[in-house]
Length: 83
Image (cartoon, rainbow, N blue to C red; front, side, top):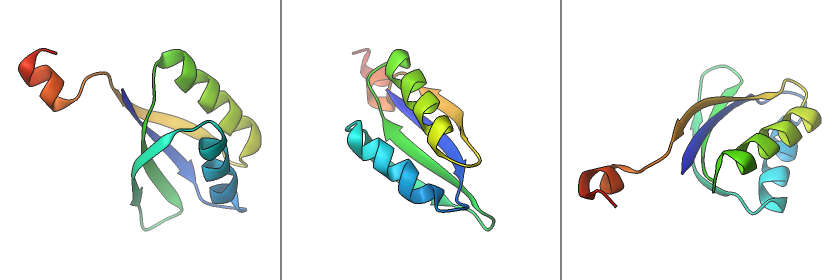
């Protein structure tokens, strides 16, 4: 499943953010940059339990915290072919 997370890149939060993703072996699919300090990152993750643990750990380490924007349970191809 895929999840889109949003964080604010202030006070060196980007290093903490990607460091925690790396230690948990989370694959980053893409990162969207905005005009302001907000960043949206799409990640590939196994299930909701792992996602909740990841967000809890990210909120503890980062200054402004992390929020879940959207969660995709199935990809477009899986919906199309019913797999």
